[in-house]
Length: 304
Image (cartoon, rainbow, N blue to C red; front, side):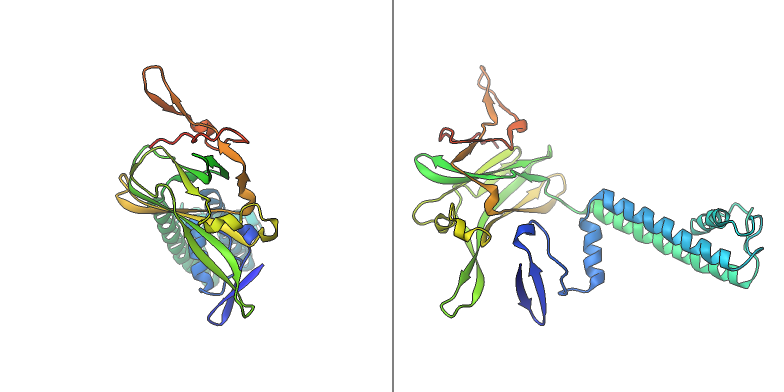
């Protein structure tokens, strides 16, 4: 666990969970962190949270109506939590069937507050859902592992990306960074970011797959880290992808991290391109994640 200080408060970064995990950070206000979590979390978690808050608040209001005593809500059984719960649901949704009505100052006060809360809650959930739907995402898939094998007699790092959508991404750019921990002569530890050159870092149109390659030759900073067990946990690879999405009419971004355990030595990807007898090509994405150890040095299928 490494601690970096920005200003007065620390941010803890766990390399083993680096794939998007920052432990509790005090760089921003908690409500901002929660808002970004609502935008970035999965739809399943988002909907579960919306449902739980909805049911929980209705239960709280039901208990408040129950505390007002018998007769506070007409046509309900005395002490029946389920009856006042249903009344709370009708009030929050502004349904108002007219069968159950509040009687007295306190029940009407609770109804007033709950009606206001229902309007605000509906507006917030609708806004968040709309923001999640309209948030542009790249729809780019990265291979789970990167492989290191020979390519034209040179030791080469390879990883794959694929376009999961039918639309094209134009002016696509791919960059590879080595993030490594270093020590100064004074004994201070710091992180350095070194960009690793790719054989091809740009594509005019990215439509299917892309096998990115970096030559691990004598000039590559990655050479001293690959296969060095003493440095495991002190480095990782960061990939950033940018491009203009034709369907979304917007710039899209994606990133991925390869930890040392995700880099397979002396391996190559299984070819995903099949050449048909008529000269046509078929891309089989079922082999996208597959790799073979100690296989031939030919280039894994790359097709754009």
